[in-house]
Amino acid sequence: MVDLTATQLAERLDVTTRRARDLLRSGEIAGRQLANGTWLADSDAVARYEVSARRGSGRTLDAATAWGLLWELSGIDADWLSASTRARVRRRIRDSDAEAITTTVSKRTRAHRFTAANAERASAGLIRTGRAAVSVLDTDLIEDASQVAGYVRSGTMDDYAKNHFMVPTAAGRDVIFENTLPIDYTADTMPASVVAADLAMSTDTRERSAGLRALEAMRQRWLAAH
Image 1 (cartoon, helix red, strand yellow):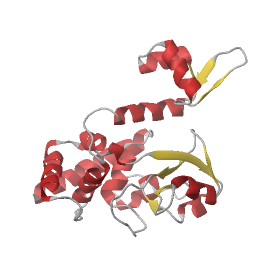
Image 2: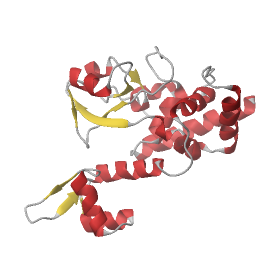
Image 3: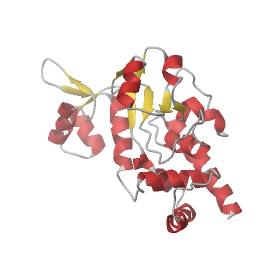
C-alpha cells in the first residue's frame, strides 16, 4: 500500500495536520520521517488505527460480559454470568446487528502485532482465532497456517512472544490477543463467535466482511432458537 503524507493522513482522519504529525511522532500510527522532515504514514498502520478508533465508538461491555455474549452466540453456557447479566446479554443480541455486536465486544481484548521467525512454532501454544481458525466458520476464506493469530493460555503476552522469537512491530501480520477470559479455556481453538468477532475487527476487507457475515448468521440462528 502507498504511504500517506501528514497532509493526506489529516484529510483521511478529518483532523488537523498538526494532530496527524503528533500521531506519527508518538507512534500511535507507524510511519517514518524523511531527511527533509516530511512524515510518511504506513497505510496499513492507518487502517489499523481507524479500526481501533471504530472500537472506541458505540456502547461496549466489560470483558467478562462481552465474553459471555460471545459464549451465548456460540451456544455455550457462560456460567460466570449472573441471571440479570445474562438477560442483559440476550437483549443486546436481540437488539444488535453484527456490526453493533462487534463494537459491543471489542474492548474485551487487545491485539498486539509481531513478526514471527517461525509461524508454526509461534502458534503452537496459543488458542487459535481469526484467520488461523477460519475453518470453524462457513466462509469462503482459506485458513492461513502461515499466520499467527491466537490468545495466550497463561502468563504474559510479552513473555510468550519473547520465548517464541516474535518481534513486536506495528506492521507485523502475526497477532497475539490478550486473554481476559474469566475462566480457564483448554481447547485449541476459540468458539466460532470469537473467531468471527476477531475477523470482524480485521483491517483486511475480506476478513472483516466474512467475520460480520458469520456473526450475523449466528445471531439469526440464536434468534430462531429463542
